[in-house]
Image (cartoon, rainbow, N blue to C red):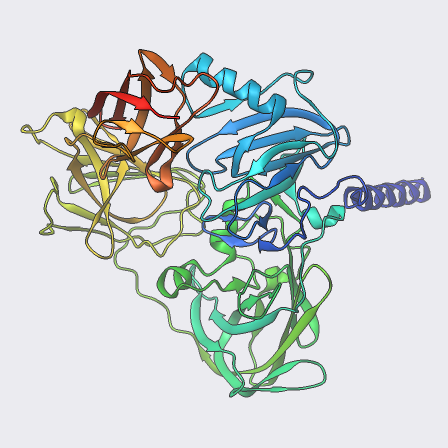
Length: 575
């Protein structure tokens, strides 16, 4: 009976192993590339971004828009999303092999996709849409042009953002695993080493060393740091700043993988093959968030914080943490690599001074825990911390001041420090008794480093102005009573617009932000594309545009506090 049980357990283990191998098998000849140019990348898959791992590959178009974008395989359009931010104009295509391809920041759509989404725009009379066509509505063939590359949404320059997702699991997978290669000509390198004492809830930096030719030597096996580093006794963690180079050695990119060894024994591995959207924000604890906010560079920890649940670590021993409780010299080394197998190895020696690390003194006795809900209510502010919002136990500081900044209608509440990340948004409610301003115009704002104010939104409820925020910082009440601005560009003194294919409208709102926008020609609604990053509304002329005759143009823009701006006049589109 015991033998049968052992055989059964062995069978289960083999089956699980086979399933894991199959799960890592990707069809390398199924998909073609989405563009007919070499895939020079402006960002590879898994790049370290603010609040997320990059979920696709950004394909360079060399500052050009309007290049053809091709479907990488047969399938059907499962989603068309149009937004002034984020992915901008995006197409999602489901394929019969269980994957979904995504094409984002498009200039415009093509063919049946363009016709379908335009009809939805006019049916719903709005620009921003999230449309899910039925399975049989828009069939797509491999190699068919589905759109044209652009710079829409939150894009910072013309390019194509391309993804391949596991359709059921909603995980994005490195397209290079499917044989879609990004051009990469150089090996990665390591630029900085950071060593932490891990006695406290928050890792304490012991060494932060920039790596250069003056403090290293080249050996047959890699680069060696010359000095032996003296560190405190106890639990220790290591972090690195490392980069890859793709087309030249002037511009840096995020690395694909890291292996960390202590005394030649592997302790930790990082490899970015898949991004789970539910876990992507754990990047804030994968890196040293405090150093990033203060100094601008991203240290990737080679140990796991207790609050880090990202699935990008194929191997760990004691979460990558090492215990140094002697005065012997120990060797650490890191192997950083790119997807094509090029690597760089860096060595350093460390030795304990046999003294414990110092502890940071908390500013008060207040403690917030990551796995429970907390409510803080004092001095005119209520702070609601949901379960799972924190990455680790926190001794927070809440400081009340009265800054001399024009437009502030309350005290300023500094909630801990913006150098501490949040995994979920927290709620803020600040008491107010402001009677001179309509309560509907009140909102919350954060005070930035330069003393300027940045709206986070919110609304008045029962004597408080409330909002959600995804950052610690300093918050105040302000009011927005100003209407947005509207300016029609390139109109002549006679209100004529000629030698162009589009109508451009500049619209701004410097406090709460633009909420809705509509335009009408002779009382008929027209489609305005909204380019939020450039404060532009655009009406692209089409076969319904009337030329060479006077017609009434009426534009209405409303901000998030209900302040309305209008522009109305007769115009002539000259052809």
